[in-house]
Image 1 (cartoon, rainbow, N blue to C red):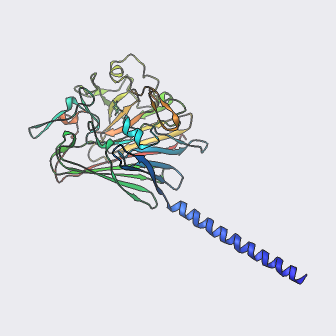
Image 2 (cartoon, rainbow, N blue to C red; image 1 turned 135 degrees about the vertical axis):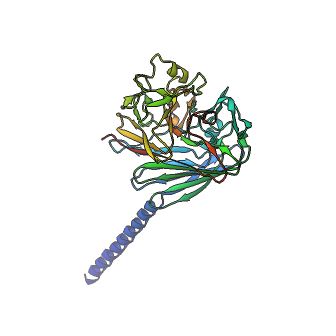
Length: 387
Ligand code: BGC
């Protein structure tokens, strides 16, 4: 009996020790999850055999953003809806090969020059340059092989707020642009559920730079198109364009036009109105002029909302313009992540940048970068819920 009793005590001690060990392992695991805010996995092979990686950043709220070294592409953004259910709010693919085959710039870093340059021509100090006219008759988003199709070097930084620092050296005359340009793009996932993007560039010859991120957003995770999202753009003017989407002379007033988003408005409300500008863009594909100048710093440019999911996104930027592109050229031929077909207006872009064709427009804020100067641009996309 005495032996049985002492066996029982021994067993209890063993169980208690085992339990305490289990708890301490759990604690370690939890700590590991909390500090491992950047996880690197394989994202497949490129056609030239290079290995691409996917970096998943997690913040303390559990928001996750995955970015690949190919094109600096934001591949997925997981944020909660009004019921706390996470969904992916950007369009894209599951592997790098598909991005390489056919990417209408989903999630990518755009450069050297985002948006169009008329006929691909510009000049600096009397010297003319001819760029690829990859969006005939104009140059678009850096040319045939812009920054969106390059491998970027990545340094992952863990800490309170995880970040990736991506660098890419664009050689003199790459895609026809002068100067060796050292580019640095830092993505930070903040604990305010913002993706903060800092762009930097330095050159050794005068050149032009206009970078942005080209994510296509759909705040309900693709349950429906973006026509039921509502949008507010804090701008009184926009760049009206010709049929090739090059700005015409002067800036257009948004008053009494489908381009007035000064009060929050359903995107579908006016998109099919009989309007020359909407016809030229096949919908919205225009740059709005923000009340921004060199000393205003970062300002609120736009707010996007989806009442179905309750999700919101605020766009803040140091840039003077925001291109709102309503996904007009998506046509159902692309099958993206989760096997979803991307139809016209499955997603929308809010690209913060200088105005289209700025190198040929002395009336616009300049995009020239001289040796010794630093190109700096910051944009944040902050996710939240309708209050
Ligand atoms: C442009 C569109 C273009 C699209 C390509 C946007 O930034 O404004 O005109 O078709 O990029 O995905």
